[in-house]
Structure formats: C-alpha cells, structure tokens
Image (cartoon, rainbow, N blue to C red):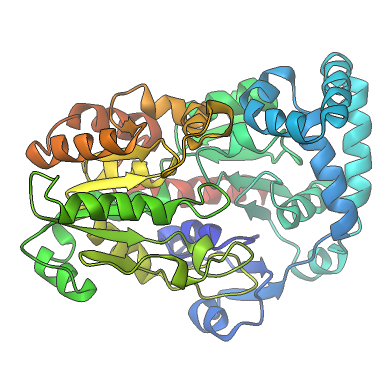
Amino acid sequence: MSITHGFQARTLLRTDVLKILKNNGIKVVIFTPNWNEEYFLKEFTDSDVVIEKHIGPNQRLNYQVWKFGLYVIPTRKLNSTINRKSEELRKKYPGRFYFVKLFNGIADRLGLIRSLWFMLDGMVLASARFGEMFDKYKPAAVVTGTPGVHYYDAAILWHAKRRGVKTICQVLSWDNLTSKGYMRVKPDKLITWNEIMKAEAVEYHDFKEENIHVAGVSHFDIYSKPQDLGTREEVFNRLGLDINRRLITYGTSGPSIFARDDEVIKIIHDAIIRGKLVKPAQLLVRLHPQSVRGMHAVPFEVFPKLPHVFYDRPQVLSEDLPWDLPAWDMRHLAEVLYHSHVVLNVASTFAIDACALDRPVIGIGFDGYEKKDYAHSVLRRYDDTHYKNIVQTGGTRIASSPDELIDQINKYLENPRLDSEGRSSIIEQQCYKLDGRSSQRVAEYILQEIGEAT
C-alpha cells in the first residue's frame, strides 16, 4: 500500500478500510516517506502491518517529465478541463504555451507520440529501485491513492505492472481526474467516489468502465450518524466559543489557492461588531493543514486576532508525510461542522463536508478588499470542471462581493433550511451513498480483487 499524502492515510488507514483488510487475513506493507516517524510506527505497526521507506525516482528529472506530460499528453478533452492552468501558463510563458498547444494537438491525433512519452516516463520511474521490495514481499496487489499523480505512487504502480502484480487505485479526491493531467500509470482497477468520476475516467483517461468501482467517500462514513457526535455544549467548550452566539465556520484553502483569508476574516468581523448580521454570531476559522506545516505554511501571526474570532488549527503530525492529521480530527471536524450555522469555504471539498451534515454553504468568490478581473480572481475556481457540478445543484451559493457575503449569511441565519434540497443533491451526486459503509465497499472490492489475483 502506497501512502504518499496525509489525506491518503486518512482515507485508507484511519477509516475502516485497513481494519477490514486485516480482519480478513491480509498482511499489509505500507510504503511511506515518513516510515521512521515514531507516531506513525506506533499507530500502525502490528503483526499484520509492516512499514517500509517509500522509494522514488530521480526527483529533478521526474518533475520535468511530469510537468511536460501534464499539458502535452492529455487528450484535448482533458486539456479543456485544466484550461485555467493552461491559461496561467500562456500568460507566464507564452512561447512555451503555444509549443505545448501544438504538441498536444499532434499527440492527440497520433497515439505514437503518447506511447513514446510513456516509454520515456517509464525510464524515469524505473530509477526507483523497487525490485528488492517486490522480491521480498511478493505482493498479491498494490493499492495507491492516486493513479500516479504523486511520483511515489507512479513509481510503485509502474514496477507492479512490470511484474504482473495487480494494481488498484482508490482515487484520493473528486478533482483528481480532471485537474491533474492524464493518468501517469493506469492501474488495473479504479475505485471512485461517484458516477461522475467514473464517467471522467472513461472519457478523459480511456479507462474501461468494467474496471471501475463506485464506492462512495470512505472518510465521510463518520457523517452518516450525526446523532453520535458530541453535543453543542461540548464542542463549544472545547473551542472556547460563546454558546449564546451563532457559529459561522470558515474553512481556508491555503495560500496557494487564496491568499486573502485575513481580509475575509476582517470583513466578517466588521459585520459582527457593527450589527450587520441578523443574529449575534462568532467566527471560527478552520485553517487548512497546508497553512499549518509544510512548504505552504503561513505564520499564525498573519491571521488577525479579533473579538468573536476563534481559530481551529489542525495538528499536522509529520514533516515528511504532507498534512497528516490524527485520527481523532475526522470526528472533531464533523462535530465542528454539525454545530455550525453557516459554513464558508474557497472552492474546496469543505463544501461537500458541510453538505453531508446539511449545513448551509457559501463560497468566497471575491478577492478580499481588492477587485480583480475574472482571469486573476478566485471566482474563476468555481468554474473548474469538478466544482461546476456542485454549483449547478443550487446547494452552495457563491458570494461575489463582501456585501453579497453578508447578505447570504443573513439569509441562512434566518432560514437554515434554505437550499437544503440542493445540498441533498450534492451528496447524492458526489458521495454515491452516505450510509456509513463506503469504507466497507472499498475494502470488499480490494479483497475481491486480491482473491482473483491469488
């Protein structure tokens, strides 16, 4: 099992997926970059689980080949879904953009070009020396969280396929099949959240429909029984919140997506203290793990400390496994969202989390105090292929100005049931089934495939 990201650890290890596999007699070898960190070893090592250091290809060469493939190798259909990234490339490097566009058109028509690229990419991935590990463990299957989006995943998938070992990918997130380029290494089997992702795999990645299993969102299983979550008093006391005020929760997206969180916080704070909201309220800012630790970390000092503004900083455990959060954080986040009256986000999965608990959702579609044209505004992110699907349901609103944000917050404070039908549509569309059994469906499919391979 390849774990290259903290969110993969959440989805595959900290849900019931790993437990079910072990209960069915499966021995699991986890390859991860944080193989020697004490907390990880203590949490997962036992008689059924071995943890090994992940092995990657030459990083510099890998990055250049991957970046080239991101724009050139996809079909034109897939390239149209990542047009925002292409547009950013055009503005920054126009010469490179037009070369890539020309080359992409040729590659789209001539399968030989794509085949040559995959041959070159294979030479890069071959530099990851996995042979000894395959000989040592003789796996029945390799399971990953991406179809080669992360180079560690790409390397182990490539080596597994070279050795005839069955490969299974539980796709990490709902945007991965439309925003990360063509599958770098196509696994034998794919597990998706929903039917939309299944269709994307077929249309954009030439995946065979019969090799795709729709299972739901394993880490959303906790949302199926909100009655089991902590009480409002317990959650508010834990976070130091005022029980007499409505709770507005703002989930940030990290500076690489949106760098005006401080201004949005001030705008909402101003509305609170000036009485612009119809109910007494407070703001809880749930920081994205990117902002807490790692290459995109932001000093906590940049976030304004204001009356009625509170912060929830997730505990990021590792330097080597990006944004790895403790198991208890899934329940903590569910409790925060369940007891929120309005949830704000910036074009993120946070919107689906909130909808799973039928909480009103607003997307920040403006750039703080600054007015930007559409091409440079955060508003354009809501037109990304994956996000347009939920916007079209009417289950989430997009605020295109500070005044519109306050107006929308007030409408939801007055009527929390507003747009509830749209939120239900989002869950039906994105989560397949919110029945608490997604982890079981994922694990059972892996077990089925392992059984066929042995």
